[in-house]
Length: 261
Ligand code: LHQ
Image (cartoon, rainbow, N blue to C red; front, side, top):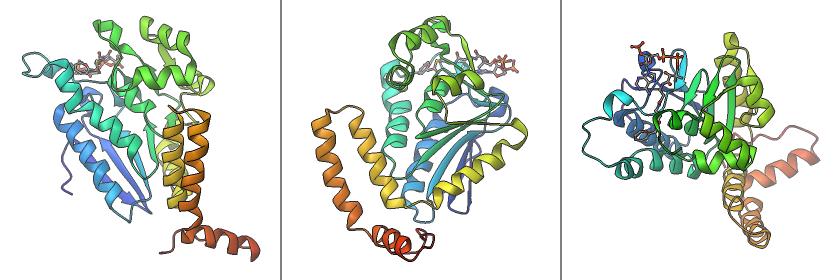
């Protein structure tokens, strides 16, 4: 993988951190950044040394959505643009066989808010904020916001946030269920790394299958979810991780899920 300037890539103790790196623009996304991020996620999925992926932003912003400096005069329609850039990115995140943490260090606006919500786990800095800013420029929420937000906060609260483009603080985001944890700005990256390393020590195959089951269940009936659980449980039960977990329990020790199968 060749790291590009717009995306920084670092791996520490099984945690691959992908940092959006256009700080002067609050990491507003251009095509180069969106393609680089999608490619980097796919590379992380294929790399056995990576157990958890973190997406964060350089500087004081997480992602201010589409770079509005680059939208005029472009040769793609809105639909073509979304289908070529943001939609593959969101699909790749949710389809990845590894947990994806969005570490929201600062403002997340527009498609940047969608990106923040699309993480399997969302960790926020105290100073972070989210704005469904689309209606400010008379656009429709995209990149998954219309799917994620009502599932988290309900239809009417989602519509209110989208229609008024109000700012959601970290405290409010925690209350609404838009994030799992809020950490102090000063220690944010260290806190994210510690959280990600806890996750990296968990059974990777079981988490991959859990993610698959949950994503399928988000749009399925109970009947279908029960069938999927029964099918995936077989895959989990046949894996060495399960034997290790049971053996460790019997031997009254912590399981080691990081050893090679
Ligand atoms: C930016 C941006 C930005 C460029 C801040 N672009 N420079 C998908 C497909 C196709 C087309 C259209 O859209 C989409 C989906 C979308 O994402 S639509 C939504 C696009 N995003 C926005 O409308 C957000 C625009 N930005 C803002 O409203 C504010 O900047 C926020 C609320 C994010 C942050 O406000 P502040 O903290 O007050 O920062 P700032 O406004 O002073 O911004 C800092 C710099 O970043 C500034 O540049 P400057 O040279 O003056 O320092 C901004 O121009 C630049 N910037 N967002 N999206």
